[in-house]
Length: 352
Image (cartoon, rainbow, N blue to C red; front, top):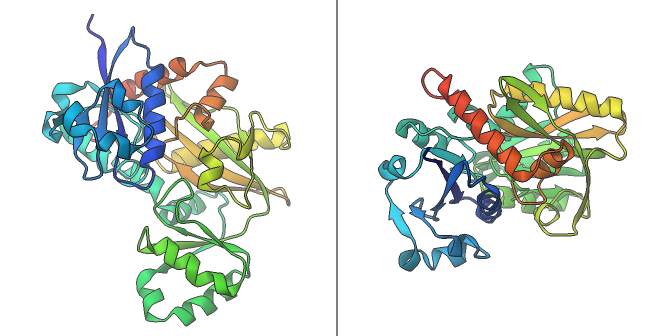
């Protein structure tokens, strides 16, 4: 029998393209070659697609790859993707990858893929909208407030005064639609507000201002497996920095992670898992997702960042929690593919 051609889509146009490269490379390396044929598909900064050889996947950065595309890779048009792959394993992160854009293209082409559909992917990227939905579902989320770039440009003093009334420092400012802590700044005094907002507006037209949370951070992978939604072991996070920065997430030695948790009691861990499943369902996620949050010192559990996908580097939460459940990387990747195929076979119209 012919092997299923799995297109591993990596790179992309977002601030998280290097994270995507690490994810895609690891998926490529651990794909079961007896069941699947790996087809690496690189998206460059202009959104063009290329079929690339292993020699390019092994490069250190997306810039290194881009400089060699013309001589060593094969360009393909969007409309030709269906001739190259039978299934898409989406390893893109951030804008145009996690937000429904690539999902919409794959729906039009009739190619099944990992993760949720267009709407749920878009919700998974918009921190403000997802908080509104989770609150409506009775889940606890941080107190927050949205500042638009129009309001800031029109009357920055009024914006500052309002924020200081709503959130006595410290508090956080972040773009509404970015991941990997890109553009996130801590505000510890009034003088930090302008720098924090200007940094957030580099990445989006809206900034989410959020209360400071004092407690233990966690992350929980949720799987839709043979029609049942379940959670894996929860990971407890202790970053080296004051908050979980980009460097803490991706530089070796910058963060300690405990799976299962070291300082969160089992009964609390079970409650976290149940809340993660509720958040997954409330946002319409499919296939898999990653739900992040905090256990506060007063015992409350807050959902802070539901993600419709997850980083898949070797030391990621995804593989750490899968390992805790006894699954090798190749096993969990195969399970994601087979479950996604079943989900797409059962849909009516685009995946929602």
